[in-house]
Image 1 (spheres, one colour):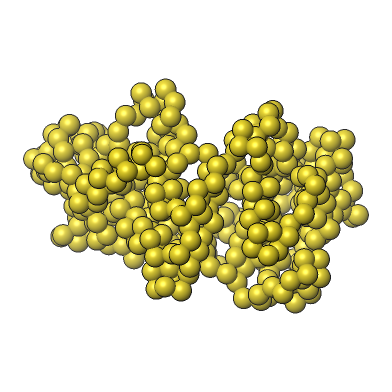
Image 2 (cartoon, rainbow, N blue to C red; image 1 turned 180 degrees about the vertical axis):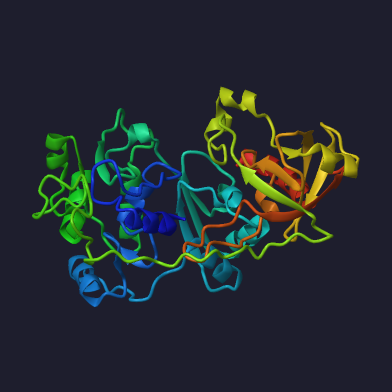
Length: 393
């Protein structure tokens, strides 16, 4: 979709001027900054490929280590390899893959197959069930550093209070790295920013003192653009002429059949954030005390389902049980639910089919059958059984 939007912007001349351009909204805070810093397995900071020998050499010289020229794994690949016994350890910061990722039973199998799972988070989330080591995280109020938004604007973040845990998250990571044999010696966050500037051409002019003076700046910020770049692609693109990229429609592999005649789509409610790890601990829980299945009256009547009935939702991946809500807000042949409550296990039934270029899972299209039920699913029963032990831990 983003490629198609970029094509349309170039085709209509809506690039390189104030008030135009392509600016897809990110799903979570600082996603842009994470990508800028090389969170992709095939790129270093500044969107430079790991296969580029000169780029790789600059990092090797600075860090005094040899780096792989082959891209690493994305999350779905990690899980597949873990089940095969070829991926041994995972360090997870601020993400609850056991609840948020599709095909939950496959994710759980991967997590239990690994020799070492480290989870660092504010809360004992669902992934912490599978952790060998749990490290406490910090909130945004305890962080010092930068966040980068979708317009490439680098914003300073200053902590309101010292971390309750005694250490910033980056200090925990640095100590772990040092214990594993690679010293990470930074006096403070500003030194990390200095390293980013030294290794990333688009950030070479950025420092904490510069941001404190300017307030914020949009990268690229370097010798060619000492005060940043509010508008990209003025006059020409980085590569000269723009490149149109063919964006053919690729239909989903997930199909309805007589056995699975309905399409399940999942989403969020306004009162809950993502998997609810934070918002379920607030008064917001009163707005959504459980996930429910919304179903159109015609589909409900065909199956003998009324509002508040327990129903089974089965897909090719698994089964869960929810209360039904018969609603005209849903179109026929489509059912809808949220994934804010871990006991629901919504992603037990979603598939791992993903986008061909980003591996982003296809949460919105899952073929299912819905039927009256008088029982919790097997997965939900297992979930209920492990809660007392987890609470004691």
